[in-house]
Length: 281
Ligand code: ACM
Image 1 (tube, rainbow, N blue to C red):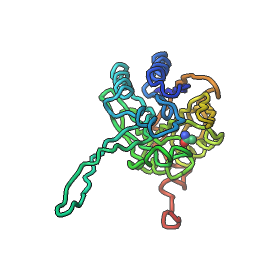
Image 2: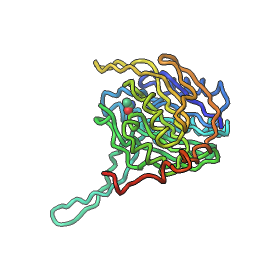
Image 3: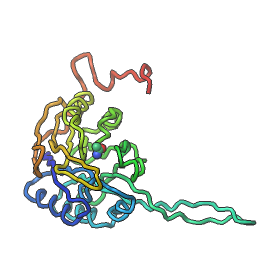
Image 4: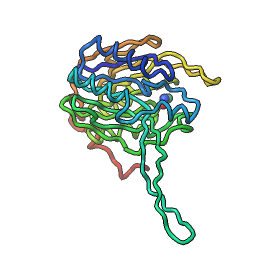
């Protein structure tokens, strides 16, 4: 399969331009799966819950519908990060003086999510489990676990940016059978690109870490993103790595079936040799 990593430079709050810029890159190549950065349509450096409210999207919104249209037109798959608005109609029991009254809580939840889109529409979602830094002020921690999606291309799982810091994320996906970890990111620390080599080696999976470039200086919170989006093989080899400062798209041809093989030698099978009863989990 042909895997494209789409490194962009979003302008905070300008969803139309950010989606248009990503599509410009995506339309310039042929690929079976495109992986975009975390929060690629909104930007990352939120300053208030009001901004999250205003820029978050549900399934019927612009970014989702535009990506579905692209996937249909190109017969391909897309993974992208966005701020997801979820209306949860939770019944709240309220006791009044002499009767119990049911009211509906229409307050939405907001997740730092990624969506997996195919020609048939929305295939699945992931909601970031390990929130980083000021994300904790604005987003609800993910509640979907680390699901795996069995596509004609191979088995795909998702994690988002800081999830790499927790080896449990990639391990969960490997245990679910994922061949490829699609990893939208907005990296500000320098460690992830090299650390992902270990995540891939220790799970014998492929990973596509797609980061953004540029700076976001908002209300004295200054963030600089490190680019260096990359594809790493199931043997821990860097198959492609982007620049640290330019929007670009890189396509890599990979054989995901290689990730089925967890054998290291005639004695060792990576996952079968685990000793969960000896671990403190
Ligand atoms: C991050 O999780 N965006 C660093």
